[in-house]
Image (cartoon, rainbow, N blue to C red; front, side, top):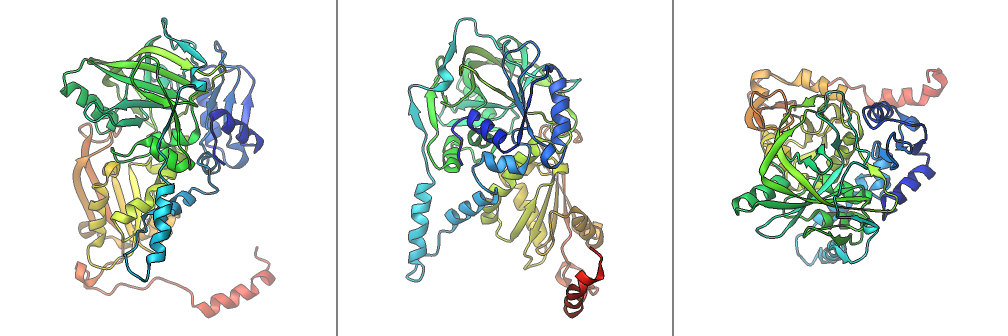
Length: 486
């Protein structure tokens, strides 16, 4: 099932018992955040999306926790399981060795690759143009949340920011939080490593005074996910969204800037960034579970607002995991695993545990075929795009269940010699990392918890793991029901 609007997604969530409408009056300052935080940490049927229909001082409903479970995120992505997307990517990547023996396989792959590329479709009319405000536009009617007590103010937390590279015109869509300064200026929190920031620097290098931007709040769920995906800078997020939804994304031209946005958008903020202006942004209660520190960031100036007749304000709350962003990260882990394995083929699986907040910990299993291969994998991971931020990499053998953290820790505790098996390197870190002595830069650690070979300097015998013999296991299996131990 592919949703053509946020409204369709909301109705489907409700029909499946995955959404709760909150009719009691709530406050956009802190109260919605507290309610959402509690619900996002519940399990089973209690963890639902929340549609707040009576927000104090506003006539616009607020949607939170819409992606806050694997079930809801799979539904948003139009699949039964997120691994379904991974398998399709694997099929596309299986470009076989050309020979008479496998020519039929090659004929299967080429149409699949062609069918997966859906370029955006441009339209002249769109629901996001139901209301157009150019004269003195203001965000004061939007129920923007203040999430945590020490936040520097209200923040838009789920914005899709559209910009273009001035050198080649290539579009980029990123998700960068925006602090509200007043009714028509907001902070643009893009980190120096992000493609949006690269477009910003390119405008400055060309001597320009302004950089146009459009910010979408709420649209088709697949498009929202695509904006979060760690794509190479030359891959258009709207083409990636087209791949996910199996058809082209419809885009419409903005009113006051030379950019196009999804026709299905709930709300669009058009404007520009003054390239000579920065303002203090933050602090902000972030997905790490800590407040990110205040710093100077570019400023977005509003020139126009367009929106649907009855828009929904789509937002997310981040904080101590697990929260909604954890599931978005888990989707990225599964969807992009085939691309990682293509570049590092000895990798069997990867787990980015919730407690590692995406970029702080990666647990990797490998098929080990030569000495010190774990160290090779560590350095390869640190060289892959945003994986460069991974503060801790743990490498284990292929038979380990990465999702059982007790099992992983058991191997780490038993299999490492600290001097031999711990690697430390200096390099880029996520801008939100508060533990490094300097911003954006620090020390990362790799732990080799694989079985050690004599060629790796381990001359003592490596003991076998304790495993019961198969005949006894089968015997007990046959008797189990009669033992009354269930």
